[in-house]
Length: 389
Ligand SMILES: [Zn+2]
Image 1 (cartoon, protein in one colour):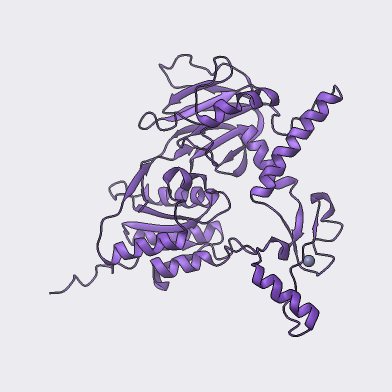
Image 2 (cartoon, protein in one colour):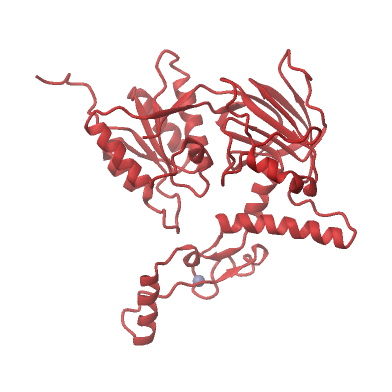
């Protein structure tokens, strides 16, 4: 008994990873570890640029693979899926591959919605490897992405969501790359004892230098203490800073009877047209502090801001509002828990498509990546089958 000669071996799940992602974080090199568990060097594709990603997906498409693996955060997921779906669109008769996605980025909201965050990525990879080797069936979950013009993603945001992402990156503190690393207690103690007792000079204690975003140029992008490159400090800490900065801006404005800077609630001007037969045909406002479209309910940290996202097959949820900062604060319990908002505070709809025309070039976010647009057509992408166990 033998297998047909040309059939690819089961072990060979094509795997894409970005060899440079997570540089200076504990996640650096994680993609390679996952690739080694799930694939072989022959079918592992390092893609750190869009062109490399394009040629990797093209080659994987020509393999007619049933599964495609990759890792990263929400932004990478959106980029990779966009390339994969564009490639597979060339052969409509060829079924889409199953998606084997490992959430390894700073923000993994889509993975949270799929229930992929319960185990570490390498535990998950080993479990899938075992199933492949023993020919066991996978557990899968179906999820449609949004199609925004010719791009695919799961969360679309204008106004508050986009301002938050923009502010998150723009005004982030800079720190010495060493300060971004998470040191274990042992490592710190070893470094400290070497400082006191001498020994190998190669191990230095971690440098904790940080400075404000506007001071980084003063130091020429180099740490004045140790000379290493200065980098933006992001992650949950930065996310909390954004919330506190916006809150202080609004409180200061209240105390001084001044207009706030509206760090998060700067309005966007847009006309949202809903599909034929939908009443009302237009969303009610022209000025919005937030427009959100999504095919997933939770926006991360268990905030169920889009409760109707998966209510109807091949539809997505639109939620738009023209609430000021304090209005949003008052609505927060509703926004968080997924309860319906009191009437008049927001406009919700479940639609298969819609068109947003902006008055000016407007910044919007797709899965945490920023872009500018004048007009966006939103529809629903094909159902994707994610391997979840
Ligand atoms: Zn330093």
